[in-house]
Image (cartoon, rainbow, N blue to C red; front, side, top):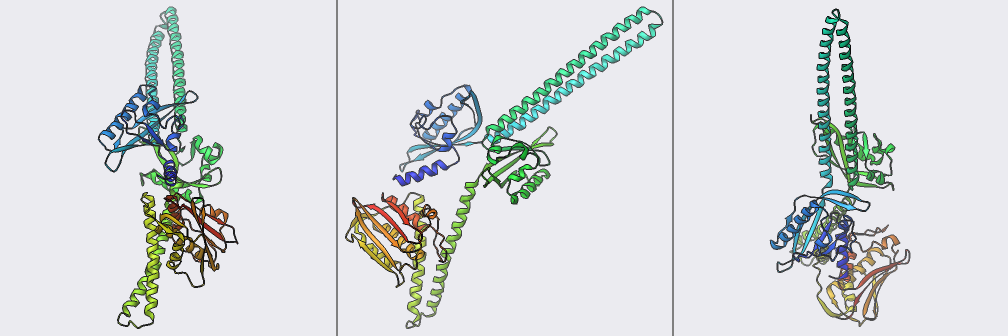
Length: 570
């Protein structure tokens, strides 16, 4: 794999949000080959402490539970290699020690996928660990709430039993007092005895009151401990989290919310959360909440924009889950928000590309269809003066369609790493003439080739010609008033350098940085520009495939020079 491909793979690999690990299938060592950024961040160790080491030398059990989890992982790895199949492990629970003497608990859904070579041999194992802690914590929170309610109910039942017992004792005392009153007339001694019994009853009542107070204090402490555990679990998840009552008024937020929004609790509580949400998304969020309450919807997910402390709104996927008591009544709602801003941007980029591609293909196809319809009418009149013009117009339309399709095919090959080079020896200056003829420039444009016109290179002639044609096309498209286009060919050590210079309006510095990105098109005021925004991106990939370099030097108002270098020899 060449450096460009490796860089692209590494960039995509590290931007995937799920923890991913590439493992060598060397049973029983399972050496770790690579880990993406999400996987490295999920552990307290550095990349150097893990990559290149055997999996079970890096991850060793620290208690019985972790030993069981690691055995499940080892058996899954062996099964994926020996049976050559995708393995989905049972849900794994982990408590990972972190600096400071504490642990972080969580759950992960791990899937193991074997990667085969052309002969069907397993050469790598791909491990993807999806963090499902949020769902499990919601279940735990609900279970903890129900457990707390059950404990309170039992305590209340015990208190009622004690109270009933006290009432029974009190009735007995009253009966004894009644007997004592009946005997009061008989003897003072019996009265004294009754007074003693009454005092004992009062002492028993005082003792019962003390016991009830102790029970209430214990129940209060249990509730406080439960709330502490609830808050601790909320602080361990990576998403923003909060609770609201049935009126949508917020009662709690975790630290992630405060860090992201810059709000404190005073600014967030009640309906203060509305100030952090995009104004257009507040009413849909409240409508979704009402639908959930009324049972009109069971899906508690909604996409909305939340403003960060930097003032920028970013897209988030918000989920609401009700917490119900034993009677099925909703006591509160738990909400979480996961940032999906990059996913939304990629979706918008894809939609924009489809729209542009459809428009760019529709124009030449419509023109070609019109030309062919006119040619059908002139099929019996081959002497018509319109015939050559229609044929030329059809050819131009077909050339544009072919170029667009070629760009799309090259993009597909690049995405699948199937861009192949068919190298041969040729003179660079010859493709300058061929390129200028192929793109059918207007007569007022003049392409001037300078430098080492006899310089030969060993490269893919078709693809290098495609890069050069793209440079010349851009010079005409973005610098239409620049009548002379200079193509310079130089030999620098063992490299050939080809540059295309125009005297157009130039390119702004912020656009120069993005000029070779996929789908990027320079916005040029006063000119109609088309294309898919793929030409320079594909050109850059072709040059990288040749192990060369590509770039642009431009100054606003003074023109632009697009250049590339490729090795001369084999």
